[in-house]
Image: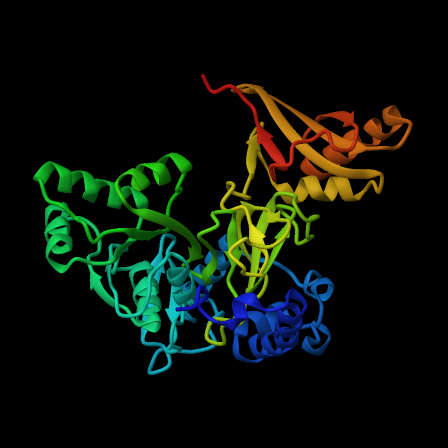
Length: 418
């Protein structure tokens, strides 16, 4: 049996890129035509010219909090519950709708493997004809359905375990003998520990695919000692599968059905390869054509290709949250404001706002990387820009290029809260 889900995973990178960029203008045109929200967002955009990553980067980013705001506004006016982003309405084309905290409502279309999870499940070691114990939630959020439809597309049978009822979960595993588990790592750990407490062996449980929470090496090693090989996937309720882990365990391979960018938090500007930034995704999903959707998650692109033989780009995985909006002296300061300040000065290559001090005694210092001479003059001008953009006074520290950490932070809250 092949080590790959399909031939798409081993394409020459140039062939993959050409295919994605060929589909991009068609998806932008479809979104503009079928989605009222994107008709407004792209009102001045000619889809035919969006044929490169540079052209894509000029389109606005729609972030998750903006999606929520637009949905709430639309619902308050008796409009679409999806805020005009869905290309389909209720009926045969939309068998299910889900709700994530907010609430943000997400549509599920009729396409086979709508959430594109089969590829990730295959990479975690599952094969057609196996039984999978799915412990993701089956109510409100789409996680349970995401995994079930992916498993069915792979040719697997699913036991819808959901969450809770730990003893019944153990009993079902002991009697049904699933090949593996899909769910959060913390819940499987609880199940395994409960099985040990009950004196019940689970010899069939040898593999797992995890999502929804962090999966650190220490927990991976814990499962290994219990005979379970665990792999992680990266997916969201809005986008479906974004990336997945392989047997090489070197980062996460990008799904074949998305176009991923890493941008500077608070902006839509792509960062250099290897720099940490916000994950922005464009899907080729015709039902919910999200284009340049800002996930709010931080990650970075890894160099080279996966040792497993898959040729798509890899990311490091989840590295934190990009929304670093911080309240300083009663005023909110956003990453986009830091970027606005930095862009006023071409000699600045990177900026980081550090907030320090104790409660009610906030101090903020904008650290800027530059190779130019005359830093005193630059610092004075930047201080004026800080006051102009944020309406707050701040200090400026000029540092050499490469001095600031590569962690995706634009605003660092270093205050003492004790």
